[in-house]
Image 1 (tube, rainbow, N blue to C red):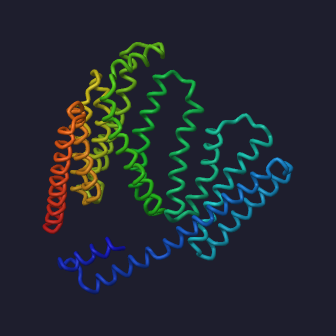
Image 2 (image 1 turned 30 degrees about the vertical axis):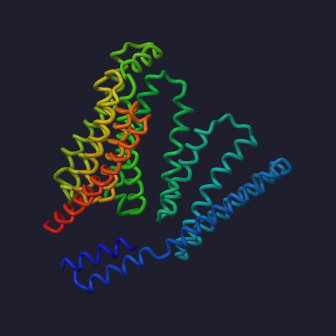
Image 3 (image 1 turned 60 degrees about the vertical axis):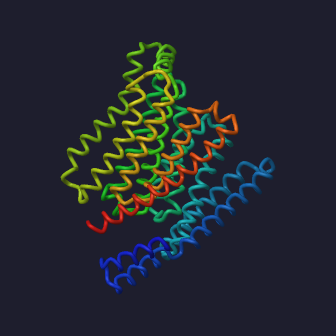
Length: 398
């Protein structure tokens, strides 16, 4: 609330809104955020109760008949579903959200219980896939806040590696690489696109925001981790993967490169179709450019399969965060600007350590490193303040 209040005051002082409008906006934000603390505590309490019940049952598990396990668990699921419906009718949002979470957890444990009792030959990946198919529509329909949106997104993302391990683990290494790169790149792009769709944002605005934010975070992680590929000899690694998969090096190279190329082609088509239809064209173009930056960051190490290079790793890392900081500047995301400046400074310091590792073993080297770090911090703070001032000036002029 402090950040919103500060912005409202700045708008009022700049003459963008009147004093009455400032009071109305402050009251609106205060009422909108009311109940979040209680809702968070409610979720933690229900989670603690659920874990406690599971621990008590687990301590006496072998002594409970199978039929009793199924009947009691089924009764708990029915009770949780009834609670969701009752709280929904009564308009008790925090209680409904908590009940939805409890039902989702009970559904997963009930499926696991059925598999254990009847000795079904399924793996964890199949269990999680079935659970997501069953529970996702229910959570989207009755879940309205971050109390359900964030756990579902985390569960969805956490289930993907388990599902891929079960169903793709026996494929040749080259196809595992293909699907791994595809999920790491195409899934975040799809989540970003889904979060921007008008239908999703009108139906579940909080869920759309969480999905979009998670997509951007994953895409950023993909772009950052791609800069670490320069520390490996990609040509040698691809040659090993191709040999183990029984194919030529050129084929393996094309399999790896086509993943980001398809993503770039998809973004180009998206731009051609939607550039004239979006409401905020500058924001759309900046966002599409940031997505392209992440894709190119993954493409370059495979496009240039040269021997390992710490210099290229540091250079591409700094270039990536310069682009990310510029995107934050264009869109007003000052946290991203601050994060970019900080990470660039840390990466420059790491380059210094890599270049003068031998010197750092002496006391004289430690003194130089300390002075360099102090100077760097001073410079970064000045740069950060300058970018913030420039952003505020640009926003005031527009």
